[in-house]
Structure formats: C-alpha cells, structure tokens
Amino acid sequence: MFSKNKRIIVGSRESPLAKEQVEIFLKAFGKKFGNSTLKFIDKKYFKTTGDKFLNKQISEIGNKGLFTKEIDDAQLNKKVDIAIHSLKDLPTELPKGLHLAGVLKREDPNDAVFSLKEIKLNKSKKKLIVGTSSIRRKVQLQKLNSRIQVKDIRGNLGTRIKKVGEGKYDCIILATAGLKRLKIRNNFKKIDVRNIIPSAGQGVIAIVTCKNKIIEKLIKELNHTRTFIESDCERLFLKSLDGSCKTPIGAIAKIVKKEKKDYLFFRYMASSLDGKRLVKGNTFFKLKSYKKMSLDLGKKIKKLI
Image (cartoon, rainbow, N blue to C red):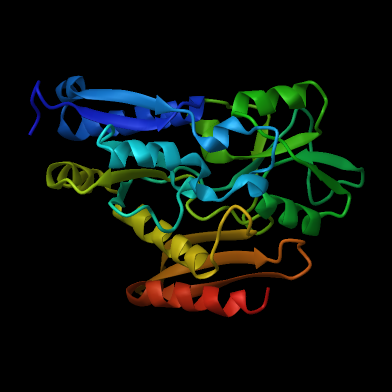
C-alpha cells in the first residue's frame, strides 16, 4: 500500500489553523496505520483567493470556493492527492472529479466571543463594537442585541486577536474549534447555539480526494460516521437554500435518542441579506430519512426569506 516510489501529497491552505488541521489529520492517520507510514506523506500549502483579498468582505469577492479553488486545481492536476479543509469552507457541490471522502471527529461546533474583558452579548446595555466577517453572525448578533455594532474584520486568527488587544474592537466572534486547535485557552467564552447558530459543518475537518481506490480506502477507515451524518444533514439544508458566503444560514445537527429510536435534532436559521426576514427554529428528523427532510425544510424556508 505504501512505497518509497509513490508518496502521498496532502494539500491545504497556508494559514496557521489550516496547517494545524493537517497535523491533526496526520496524527489520526498515523494512529490508524502506524506512525511509520507518515514518512511516505508530504505536505503542500497554498495561498487561496480568499487569503489574498483581506481588505474586502468575503461576500464581496465570491462564494465558498474562495478558500478551496487553488487546492482543487492542484488535485485535479494530480499535484495533490488529499486535501484537508474546514468543512464549512467547502461548497456544497465540489468540482467534477473531487469528492468528500471522509471527515474527522467534530470539535466543538459553537461560535465563541473573544474579549479581554467580561462581555455578555445579549445583556450588554452599552454599545459594543463586535468584529466578524460573517453575515450569518452579523444578522444573529443584531437580533440578539440592538446595541451591537458589527464591524468587519479579516485576517488569520492571530491578526484578529491582536486587533482586540489594540482596542479596535470590544470583542470578536470566532469558531471555538479554531481557538482550541490553536491552543488558545483564555479570554473566550462559547456562545449558546440558541443565541447564534453555527455555520453548517463548523468544527469539522473535511478530507477531499480525487478518484483513487487505494486512497479512498484509507480515508474510509478514518471517517467518523456520526460526524459525517450530522454534517451531511447540515450541508443538505445549506444546498437546498443555495447557500454561499452571501447567504446568512446556520445549521447544527445532532444524533439523539427519542422514544428509543435514533433521530437528528436539527437547529437552523436563515435570513434575507439585510436580516429583515429571518427564520429560526428547531425540529427532529428521522435518521433514515434525514436527507429528504433536510432538503424539504430548506426549500420551504427559501420561500419565506
């Protein structure tokens, strides 16, 4: 399966978080197949379109493919065998020839508020300047508290945190998973999903491959089934709403027991771009029919926003 003549090339973005996610993947790979196999794996990092235009909002310059296109092209040109992505960055439709082969066990999916002072977003009586580049977060923040002023912020996690220290923001909103993976332990607090519903696939590391039976077989053994089902449910909802970086959509699914049967508890939100028409709620899907139920819910909500 492994040989000195045929090495496996793993590709990802060149951000500190992306590199850490590659290390998490390699650790899982080594644990499953033996650390000796890691000597046959090379790493290759890319600066994507989304990383190049940090002075613009994501919604201004394109869709979710912003953070994957250069890596997709490298895979299709056989320069990369396996791509590691944050699942929330992946379009619901991948380029022809690529497919989502598996996911690793999900880290905490919640958003988090990072600040150097104690802040309660929903209870603050003072004006708060909150940094985020996500319109999903912006819409929910402004519904949570009218005193919140959302100010756009881009850059890698370290850059954004530095701006809080400089006093340019009272706080910023980040993914808890990213903070944990970069071993940032202080000055942040998870946000209840009832207040801000996360992005579909948040906290999940995605493994994308080209058609290759040997590599697909390896990734299948690494795939975390529960995470795959839950995130698939979220992405189907996103797909039915034509979700992109220009669409405020949140979704989080969790497999639960109800009356001794398996269900998906599904929490969701979607809104118009200006936030004036917002639909938010939760429901249960039967595990066996979650695909159709998630798509149908998305199509229904699309008519309302």
